[in-house]
Image (tube, rainbow, N blue to C red; front, side, top):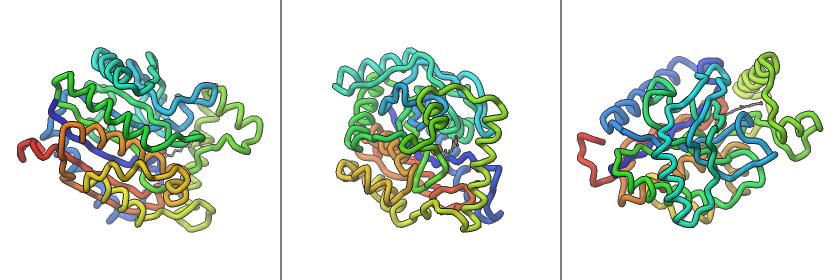
Length: 319
Ligand SMILES: O=C(O)CCC(=O)/C=C/C=C(\O)C(=O)O
Ligand SMILES: [Fe+2]
């Protein structure tokens, strides 16, 4: 296997509640750099780790992680809807390889995904059907959340299983870093909300539009400084990036669920997707972080980051 990795924040507020033009220009330049990296690497398989925001996974059955052999996007927040170009054979082979390595992976033969999966495919490849992909859901919001060491174990097992395919594999982690957007919480939820989080009945278009407008308004209030959501934490975000850049993946095993939430907010656990992606890359040996962008963007309620990494053994031209 030839491998590389990308970590990329997502936000449903991109294009709906944008920051100052200078910030947009900096993000655009960073995205340009990430796309150039991906284009030069030219993956023939993408393993995409992403969370869900109660569009595909509900408390009726909530796995810590799940690999899809087929997937459909709901089209939330204006993101693309429809089938993802899942490489079903590769997905099945990786799933088997992961189970053989002692990680109890859940499988979905028809996963429903949302903007967490779609945004990185749109940003990096221009659509959800452009590149063979293996989608891997990583729970980052629904408590109780398991230890980070299991996410690293998942990433390692997927990396080792993917290595047996002899492909050019790009591992992508979607989400984070520190952020506390208005994602509903089961604990203490009123019965109607609790029922929706457990059963997962698809919202009507009107209900979806109202929910999305609430998130947009929350972004406006957050940027104006008039909310109780916890602040973006650049110090913690840079600690996360430093840890991944330094290849110190063992360190994350001691990161407690509580500490991550306290430092990074309710959705800080989307960082699990980055940890999985970098753990997968690390299975082929030493890697180098080849680019790194970070900007706190309150308008998007995001410690917004993008990073690329490649095996040190990969020739410079292909990184
Ligand atoms: O309110 C809802 O029902 C959905 C809210 C939602 O989907 C928010 C998503 C936020 C992110 O994906 C993020 O900032 O990472
Ligand atoms: Fe998210």
